[in-house]
Structures are given as C-alpha cells and as structure tokens.
Image 1 (cartoon, each protein chain N blue to C red):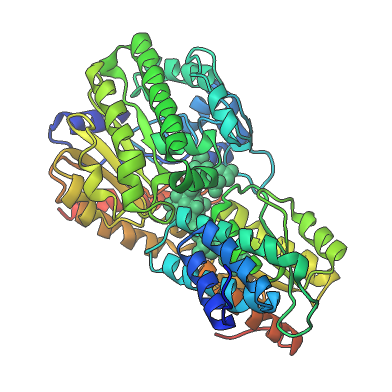
Image 2: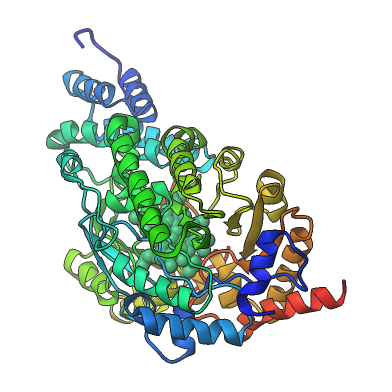
Amino acid sequence: MTVTDRAMKLLKGETIDRIPLFPFILGFCAKNAGYPIATIYQDASKSFELQTFTLEQYSFDWGPLYGYASYGTWEFGGEIKMPESNYEQAPFHTRFPVNVEEDVDQLQLPDPAKAGVLPIAMEFSKLQASNQRPISIICGGNFSIAGNICPVETLCRWMLKKPELVHRIMKMATDHIVDVVRYWCEAFGAAQVIPQMWEPLAANIIISPKQFERFVLPYLVESSKKILAMGVQHILYHICGDQNKNLPMWTQVPTGNPGLCSFGIDIDLSVAIEYLGENNVIIGNIDPIALLSETPDTIYNLCKTAIEKGKSAPRGFMLSSGCEVPPEAPPYNVYIMQKAIKDSMASG
Amino acid sequence: MSSRMEAEEIFKGLSEAVIAYDEDKSVEFAKAALENDVDPTDAILKGLAHGMEKVGELFDKQEYFVPEMLACADALNAAVEILKPHLKIRSEGPQVKVVIGTVEGDIHEIGKNLVRIMFDAAGWEVYDLGGNVKLERFLEEQQKTGADVVALSALMTTSMAAIPEIIKMIKSAEPRVTVMVGGAPLSWELARKYGADGYSPNCGTAVNDTLEAIRRVREGHGSWER
Ligand code: B12
C-alpha cells in the first residue's frame, strides 16, 4: 500500500493491513535532514521535501502537512517571527493585531490569496496535490485564531467584562476559516480538501466548559457546517490539552463522515472513543515529552496501550504523538511507534 | 461608607471582593480601610492577598479558570492602587524581589502570568520580562534589580532545555540567588536535575514553594530533597 492508500482506505471504512501512523512531526523533519527548523515554515518546497524524507524513513501514513499553532496573527495584520535559535520550535507572535477595544473596529477579513502565510501554505498544498497526498489546510480552530488575533488573556478578561468583543473576534475568525477553506476548495475541489483545525486555547486549563459552550462551540458548529456544505468530506480537529469537560460538547461539532479527531495525553483514548468514536477516526496520543526523554521500552509500552485502546474505535484509529514530536526527540524513539504498530499486527 | 467599620470586617470585604472579582467592591473596601485607619499593609496582606490565595486554590480545583483568575487580579490591583500611596514602609513580612519570565523560544505566557499575579498579591516586587526571553536577560535583570529570586517558566521541551543554561549563568555569577522553575513539562525531578533551587506545580503553591526555596538557599543547602 502506498503512503496515502492506507489512511484513505481507513476513511472509506475499508479493511487495512495495519494501523496507520499519523504524523505530527515538523521541526524534527528539518533536523533529521540537517536543516534549521525555520525551513519547515518558510520554504514550502523544501519543507515538503524534508518532511517526505522523514515520513518515508519512519513509514508514516499521512502528510506532509503545513501549519503552526500561532496561525492568525500575521493574516489579520500582526507580526510573527520564524524560529531561529536552538530553543525555538515554531513561529511565534511578536505583535498582535488587536490589543485594545478600538483595534477590534479596525479588523478586516484577510484575503486568502494574499494574507500572511497563506501563499506559502497554498504552494505547499499544490505539492500535496501533485504528489497525490491528502490536501490539507491548517487554520484554526476558531478560538485559537481569536487568541492569535488578540492576546488570549485579553480575550479572557473580555469574556467576563465585554463579552460582545469576544463574539466579534470569534465571528471574524470563523468567517476567515470559511473563506480560507473555500479558497482551497476552489483550487483543488472540495472532495480533495481535508482541513485541520488545532484548538489548544479552548483547553479547560484556560477556559471553563461554560465559557467553551458560550464563546467557542457555536462558532465551531457554524464554520464546520459551512465547510461541509461546500462538499468537504472530512475535517480534522486536534483537541489539544485537557478538554475532558468540553468533550460532550465537541460531539455537537459536525466533522464529516467520518471526521477525524486527534488528542493529546490529557484525554484518555477510551474516553475519546466513547464520546467521538462513533463519527470520527480517533488519532493519538503518545506523550511528546516521553518521546523526548523516556526510554524506548517506555514508549513501546505507551504505544501498545494506545493501540489496544484504539482497537475499539468503531471508525478506526491512527497512532500519533499527542502533539508535535519534539524536534530533539531521539530518532529511535520515533521509530518505536512504527515498530509497536507492526508488532501489534503480528500478535493479532 | 460612612459608619465605622472594624478592621476584620474590612479584611473580609476585601477578600470577598477579590474572590467575587468585583472591582467596585474592592475599591469601596480599600477606601473604607483608609477612612477607618486600617493599616494599608494589613489591608493588602490580610484582605486582598488572603482573597487571592483562595482564588489560587479555586483555580487549582478547576472551579475558576483563567478568565476568573485575571478578573480577580484586576479587582485586587484596583484596590492596591488606592492603598499604595498610603503604605508605610514596614520591615516585617517577607520582602521578596523576583525576576520572572518565559524562556527563549517560548511564548506560552498564561501560566507565567498567573504565577506573577500570585507574587504580586503576596506584596512582592516583581520584574516581569515577558515571554521569549533571551537566556542572558535573566541574569542581567537580576543584577540590575538585586532580585532575590529568578523564576523561569517553560512550556515546551525545546525551551525547557534552555533552563539549565540559564541556571548555570546565574549560579556562577550570583550563587545566592534563588532560582525557581515551573511550567507543564517540568517536575520536581527535572528541576533538581537542572540545578534549580525550587519548583512549584501551580500558581496556588508558587508563593510558599518559593519561600521554602529561599530558605533552603539562605541556609546553604546546595541540593534539596522533597
Ligand atoms: C495555550 C497553548 C498555546 C498557545 C499559547 C498562548 C499564550 N499566549 O500563552 C498557542 C496557541 C500560541 C500555542 C503555540 C504553540 N504550542 Co502550545 N499549548 C498551549 C496549551 C494548550 C496550554 C498552555 C497553557 O496556557 N496552560 C495554562 C496554564 C495556566 O498552565 P501552565 O502554563 O502549565 O502554568 C501553570 C503551572 O505550570 C505553573 N507554572 C507555570 N510557569 C511557572 C513558572 C514558575 C517559576 C512556577 C513556580 C510555576 C509555573 O503555574 C501555572 C498556573 O497554575 C498547552 C497544552 C498543555 N496541556 O499544557 C500547549 C503546549 C504547551 N503547546 C505545545 C506546542 C508544541 C506548541 C507549538 C510549538 C505548536 C506549533 N507547532 O506551532 C506552538 C509554540 C509557539 C512558540 N514558539 O512558543 C506543546 C508543547 C510540547 C512540548 N512539550 O514541547 C503543548 C504541551 C501541547 C502538547 N500537548 O504537546 N500553544
């Protein structure tokens, strides 16, 4: 089976020979081929090439992918900086478009053809298309974009003191997501596009389930419905951080047939399957810190447990790191994920 | 408020106003403190800071979240603004100066800011360097301010790797400075391995754990046990 076959068959509900390995591995791919991490974010064709090497080396079944968590700042008129030093892992914001109330009036919807990083992302997606890889666009989730438009702490204060401002920014983020996905659909055909939304800021270490329900859920539902109405078949949500108390509400977000939901270590895979397994392929959730600092044996056991739990996912399961693989992770630890998959197949 | 109020009543009012993130009420009680000749330092420590300590506990129990934490801090700060001009310099109570920041490569600032709020609430002098702070900036700022404590926050494994470097810099130049570390990927074990003097798992415990660490450093324990 080719790289993409396995995952695509899984989405179609067909039988596959083994559990797919889903990549959440960016900076590592640059280091692995002797390049600085920034290459992954700055140079679409080099990024595609470097990721391809690593994905092949470790037999990943999806990717390459382009995106980062600070998405939205640049597109809405702020500034980001690409990673440079040894300690930097991904782009980060240096100036937000919104800092005070008056800035909200100035916000305008970005042009998906021109704004911020989108031209690089588009060039990357063209490479996905010409190499028969799944076409993705990583933009979102809605609240995480809002938190990249306006510092999340300001958003948090406004939730209690000026809720209408939060709603206005959320609406902007939501319209932007829809615009971007529409632009991608026009370029590649809706059935080919699998948008990815990462939603770390909605974690319950930051906002309460009530705040999620009031300020986040309606917007997730709105953009998802609009995206599916374009003809998109599958949406991937990375439900980052501890969102255990949000999980019952996530079931209301349409994700396609099936959708895809990926999780970090804060959500037990069995719980994820219980809430979201019926409609979604479940992806997760090997601890990135373990990948960096634990022994291969420990990682192997984590994978075995995850695979065991994943087996009961009705729409299927893909093994993955719970969030980005640390760029400094020992390569052997990354390899162990594939080994655990192969061994699990051998043992039935 | 016109009628005479007892100090205890004012402390309680301040504390409750902070917990209820009611800025109007915290300001009202701060004014009442001044009108009733309550020592402003007591109003801060026994009223406002006491309330904020409870807020830290509510946050740890996931009854409060970041929005509530920040709003409570706003209520506290509004009252402090009123009390500040009337503060008499006092020597009792721990007078701690802290430099705090999220280390290079890392923009995760939410947790660091909550810890900062608790340090502020304890009446400490806080120098906040923000996020993505270059390694050498911590020592520079410590030397400029004569801070007793440098508090480092890291949320990513890449940036976490900068911590031992920073500690080395500080300890070779200023061995009597206490270094605290925190952030989701850190632990007691890692903190010790990196050569830090202390660690705290969350903002509710940060003030006490820092005081403990300061004590350990002053008593000359090179390493620490838990
Ligand atoms: C919110 C968030 C973001 C936001 C940050 C917004 C902001 N302004 O801070 C955004 C979306 C921008 C973001 C970006 C990224 N993120 Co992020 N993010 C998170 C998330 C979901 C929550 C972090 C948080 O705010 N927690 C809430 C606070 C209250 O908790 P806390 O920080 O732990 O702080 C408490 C304690 O630790 C302690 N404490 C904290 N500091 C200190 C300091 C001292 C001295 C003491 C005593 C105590 C202390 O007290 C605090 C209060 O109780 C975590 C997931 C997680 N589970 O932690 C991922 C996470 C931190 N992110 C991660 C990653 C990978 C990224 C990106 C690299 C993704 C990417 N490829 O683009 C980028 C990095 C950008 C950069 N260069 O820094 C990973 C890091 C993995 C790793 N270990 O290396 C995490 C852990 C997700 C995961 N499960 O893997 N992220």
